[in-house]
Image (spheres, rainbow, N blue to C red):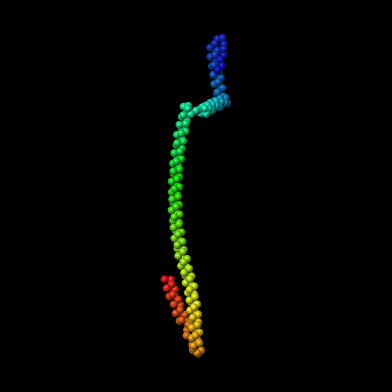
Length: 192
């Protein structure tokens, strides 16, 4: 506040102070001035906070491990590091357990698939050998049928030569049926 120095001293100062206070009140009643005053007041508060923050940053940068603040910060850092390691170990243990469970499940599934594959492979070997034996049997039987057909033909020709042409030929079908029955019984014997 302004003070006016006069000859009579204090009276003049008091009047001046009252005049200044009254003038300030009158100015604060003006909305535009009040708004500007509030804005400036907030700006000063922000600047004070910024100054305090910068001073704290300077103090933090200048700390040493031997200072009280430095010792507190170092202790806090060690505590946080230990907590982080503990949390990391717990997370790793959980992941390892989960992965080991998945691995065990995968191994059991692989063993099951391998067992099924081996069973199928054995069945395929049996079926392949059965099919090969069946093919061999078919070839043998075809050969025997051809032999029997040739024998029937030969026997019919002999029979035809021995008898005069007037007589009727016996029916060759019963001979062929007998041969087919013989072949079937041989096939049953070989399969057994």
